[in-house]
Length: 288
Ligand SMILES: NC(=O)c1ccc[n+]([C@@H]2O[C@H](COP(=O)([O-])OP(=O)(O)OC[C@H]3O[C@@H](n4cnc5c(N)ncnc54)[C@H](OP(=O)(O)O)[C@@H]3O)[C@@H](O)[C@H]2O)c1
Image 1 (cartoon, rainbow, N blue to C red):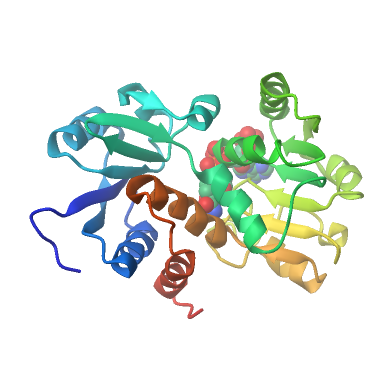
Image 2 (cartoon, rainbow, N blue to C red; image 1 turned 180 degrees about the vertical axis):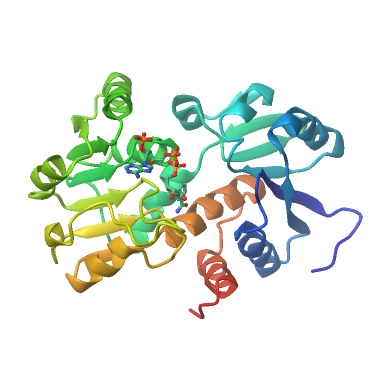
C-alpha cells in the first residue's frame, strides 16, 4: 500500500483498540480495490472524545469506526444520524461527508448479512435472542422486521421489556415481540419451538470462555445457533451446538460483515467480503 499526499484516512476510536481486527480487514479491502485509503487505530480515552472528534473535523479524516466506550457518548458531537442509529441510540461508524459528520450503526445489518451468508433466512422464523445490551438492540431492531416471532431474554428483565416495548411502538411488522427474564425455565420454554438462537450477551467471552448461556440439552440439529461473541472464535455454546449438529454462525462472521457495511459507507463500493474474512481469520492465526 502506497501512502500518498491524497490518501484518505479512516480509523477506529475506542479504549482499548490494540486488539482490534478492523485495521487488518479494512486495509485488506482497500488494497483489494487499489483504493488510496488507509485505516489506523486511535486509542482515545473517555475524557478526550470531544477533542478527538474535533480533530477528525480539523484533519479531514474520512471515516471512523467507534467502539467501547464511545458508542453512545459520541452522538452529541455528530451533525446527523441515520435512521437506525437514531432509534438504537448508538453509533459504530462515522462518515465525514464534506465536513458534516454522520453516524451509523452497522451491527444489525452485519448480523442479517451473516445469517444470509450461511443460507439462513430469518423471515417467518421464531428467533430467541439472549441479551438486551447494545448489540442486542441493533440486531433485534433489524430482525424484528424479518422474523415471525422475536423473544428477548435478559438477566435484567426491565431492559428486555423496554427494548420489546420500543420495537412494538416503532413498527407494526406483525412480528410477535416478547420479553422475559433470562433464566433456565424461560429459556427451556422458548427454545422448544425456536428456529434461531442468538447469544447477544457477553456470556462465553474470554476470560469466561468456560461459560455458556444455555443448557446443551436444549440444542437441536434443526436449530441455527448464532453467537455474537468472537473471542474465542469457537465459544462453548458453538462447540456444544456443533456436537448436536445445529447450524452454527460465529461472531467473527458478523464482525466482518458489520465492517463490510462500514467500508461501503466510506467508499461507496461493494465490500470484498471474502477478502476481509480471510484477513480477519489470518490475523487470529486461522487460515481460511
Ligand atoms: N460479532 C460482532 O460483530 C459483535 C458486535 C457487537 C457486540 N458483540 C459481542 O456481543 C456481546 C454483547 O456486547 P454488547 O455491546 O451488547 O454489550 P453490553 O451492551 O454491555 O450488553 C451486555 C449484555 O450481556 C448481558 N450479560 C452480561 N453478563 C451476563 C451474565 N453473567 N449473565 C447474563 N447476562 C449477562 C447483559 O445483561 P444485563 O442487561 O442484565 O446486564 C447485557 O444484556 C459481547 O460479547 C460483544 O463482544 C459482537
